[in-house]
Length: 132
Image 1 (cartoon, rainbow, N blue to C red):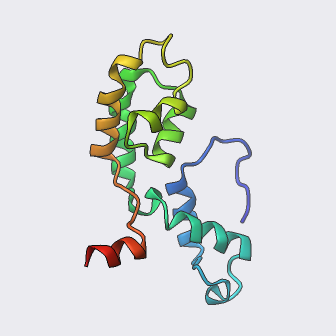
Image 2 (image 1 turned 180 degrees about the vertical axis):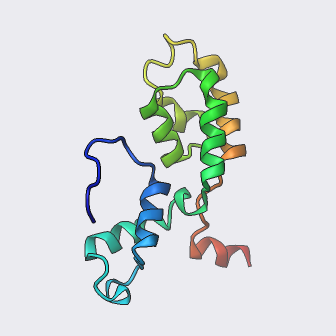
């Protein structure tokens, strides 16, 4: 993997996953026929188990556009996209100085917006077995 522009900005997990998909990464390092490194396969294996595998560029763009009214920093938006919190206790530590910025009263609204716009992480195989 080549760095085209150093320090151009942080990537979301979705963007990293897309880069790995274009490089034909799989969970099996031998399945990629040497196109990717074993560490890239491990990252791919991790990311396909997160919300990143269900996200779309449209959902991320929509989230970023709607979240403007909350005056979140770029790092806070990135963490929310990557972690996809679904409750106030999950989102509270992501937002720096939440109380003093006056965001505490709108946390529930922000969480509901995240849950509505950003798709959930895939269910795990054991969860699927329980649902059958």
